[in-house]
Image 1 (cartoon, rainbow, N blue to C red):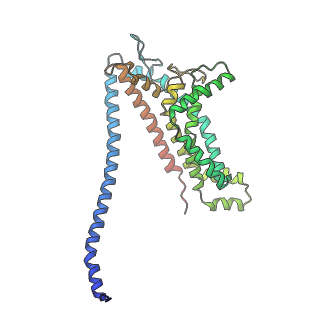
Image 2: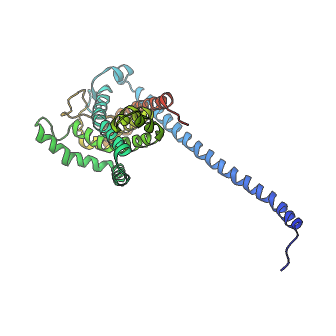
Image 3: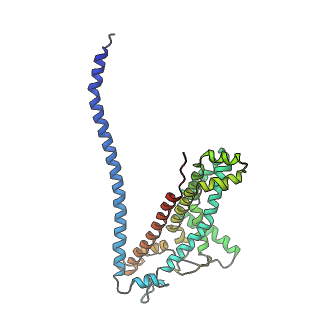
Length: 317
């Protein structure tokens, strides 16, 4: 078997190099083009949603019996009441905020405590068992949470107090809190574990206990990630649909009593799109105005979350 001279091998490599370089450049161009196309598609979808919401909302305010003053100034929401229709959005906003506050009051502290335990106290074996169990909660359909609220949470509340009816804000809020609990716990635990080990070692070297290190060092260092997890979970709770549609009731009213029925913005949209209102009527158009308000609320929370991330982000070498 004869071997080729080194000069021949070098010539063969040089002959194949331009082709491989051209192929690599073509492959990179295809990848960059695909990524740009995906980003453009996302922007187009978002823009289309905003345009549709804006167009239909403007169409809603073009009806003679609707005005901006009533929409933002009235405290009555009765779009399906026959001749006496009222379009004050505040009862829907109040119901949405009441359910969200109940959900956040349950999920945020429980999720943060669970995250601190998983990050600072749990052994690897316990963490490997608990965290997948929490992730399972995130995969349960929300309609299942709604039936869970009706069949288990509401009867338990009725045993505690007869003031709770079959539909109430507390039951819907607790079920929504259980739903957003994995978001708070998982993202907060990731933020806590991202804190460098050197900070913990320095605090232990100064004589701090594990509790002191967890509460006074690790949690403040991961504050931006924790707050971002909180805001993401709250945004998810505001936009929840099936739980509140099944468990919260259908009375749009301004109340702070968790035992009473409320109607959220998403639940009202479900009611309208079930087919009870004509597609060209003011009732149907009002759902787009409510959706636009919901979009503004969630977008505002998203912007606050981005500001918190940039303002309080800690960078470590």
